[in-house]
Each structure stands twice: as C-alpha cells, then as structure tokens.
Length: 295
Image (tube, rainbow, N blue to C red; front, side):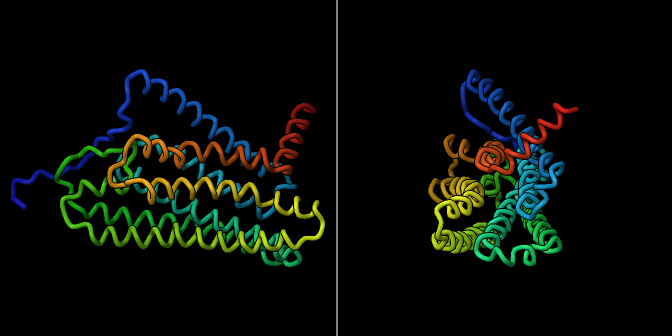
C-alpha cells in the first residue's frame, strides 16, 4: 500500500434505508418492544428470586437466560465499535451455550429422573452456569483482538444497524483468511456443535416421553421441555435463515429485520414463552400478586 493511505478509525452504521415516516414508526415500535423485553425478563428474574418453589436448576438456568436477554437487548443501543462488537459476540456465544445447558437439564430430568437431584447438584449448576459466560467472553475477546489488528482503509459505512461481524470484515483492506478461519471454527463450536448436542438431547427426551405409559404422564413430561424447545427453535431457526440461507455478504433490508430477532424480538418472546407455556411460572406470578394484595 502507498504511504499516503488513510486509515479508517471509526465507522458509520447505514441502518435501515427507509422513508422518514417509516423510521419514526419503527423507532416507537422498537422502543416499546425494548421496554417490554426489560419488564418481562425482569419479571421472570423477580419471580425466580422471590418464589422458593422456583429455586430449582431449571429456573436457575432460566434466570441466566433472562440476564443474557436483557444484556442482548441493551447491547443494541451503544454505538461504539469495540464495545458493540465485543458484547454482541459475547452474548451470542453465551446464549448458545446456556441453551445447551438447559437442554441437558431437561434431558437429565426426563430421561434419568431418579438421579436428577444427585446429578444436577448446585455445584454442578453453578459450574454449568459459569461455562456459557466464560465461553462467550473468550470468543468475544479472540474476535475483538483479530478485528483490532486488521487495517481498515476503505469505505467506513457498515451496511447494517449494528457492527455485525461479517459486514465489518468486508471493509478490511487486507487478507482476512485467518479471521475467516477463526470465525468458521467459532461457528462450529458455538452454533453447529450446540445445535447437534441439543438435537441429541431432544431425541432422547422424545423417546423417553413416548415410552411413558399414561397419557397424562406424557403430557406433563412434554410440557416441562416444550418451552425450551420453542426458544431453541426461534434462536437457531433465525440464525440458519440469516447466515446460511440468505446472502450474508450483501445484507438487504429483510435480512436486517431478521437480525432484529436476536437483539430485540428474542428477548421479548423468551419470557412470554416461558410464562404462557409454564404452569409453575404462572402460579408463581399469581402468588406474587396475592402477596401484594395482602400487603
């Protein structure tokens, strides 16, 4: 490169290329969804902390999912490149891993119910909760270091509403082969690997449910994991559409809207799924309301 090359030190987010009226409408819609996400996930956290009946491994991991979702939604607000990229990757990796941990919890509960208390001790639960956060932070640190070492000397407009990793890499004016290999390895470890582990867990879970003799027993067993199955389907289903089916090299407006599921819609839908499809959470909510009326 020539000695007069100008290096890019900051970027502009293109965002959604829509009419002014539509942007204002989306601003209010997304603001309401964001506030609702904070309130809904905060309610789940509050119920789990206050109700002793929810002090079980399943809801312990659910509380971590709520914290990740709150952080995930809040992460879309900052505009600083390093912070935004770092936190987005960290929360994405952490959510993938916490979903695996939750599927393992349901596997033990349904396939080995007699050994559940011994297997899912609080020591094991705390260890399994620390693992997703640690993996997410390690992944984000590695990616951030790779990005900071790359030269940006071309256009500085990121064709996205946040610093999405592939969109940022397109602006690099050097060979990104090493970075792409690291991203590929991370995708296998944090996406394909966890998805395969969850599929194996749910195959065993479904097989165990089908072997239950009573219809009521099958219904109760399936209800304990159906909420998690819906959350997993949303999270990984949207990821497949965004990064495997659509053209991630040229993100258009539909793909940008699909990407909102991670930072906006998923944090809103997860507490709804767990509250509407979970009898224990609904019972805890009713007990909390009764205590408040009694006061």
